[in-house]
Length: 222
Ligand SMILES: N[C@@H](CCC(=O)N[C@@H](CS)C(=O)NCC(=O)O)C(=O)O
Image (cartoon, rainbow, N blue to C red; front, side):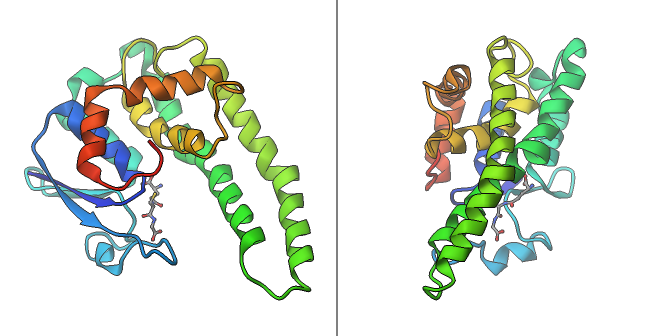
């Protein structure tokens, strides 16, 4: 039996969607973020030393695995023949699978951190300096990188229904989180990235995705 260690409002939603697509029997262990720090509870460190979600354990193969990309590869490799990319799409699938956490997520997380920094409480005489520094990093580095990444995704999705053509593959599960989070935050809209926006609506309309959403509880990005 597979157990998914699931944190509210997290990348773990990707795995729920995949588990539902695979039609596997599984348990969910729920973990709640600390409302102040938004960090995961320490109990997650008992499952894996880094204490980040998602993590799966699979009794059948005695494996405990973290990193959503690795989990997606494991599940598809072990149980999901139907989601394996066709041979000619293999490297395309590998590329987008890595792009999600390797290139797309970092400047998105930085945007969140620097935007939060501007709003956090601090002595009044530091506020203008902190704000100026944050704005400079945002405008010089973070925003241009996010824009370039999203334009690249948009151009790919203007020609492809899913990341590897007509078929859902590992790349789609992995790309779903940063893209739907960007829709929820207003970075991706119908008027600026129409194909990416449509793509997000397309996978969110799948029955398995909806079932995963129902089972996972609190998730602000759908
Ligand atoms: N690259 C990892 C990132 C894992 C990660 O940072 N998970 C976040 C949730 S989206 C987490 O557990 N945050 C809580 C914490 O850092 O305490 C993956 O793709 O699984």
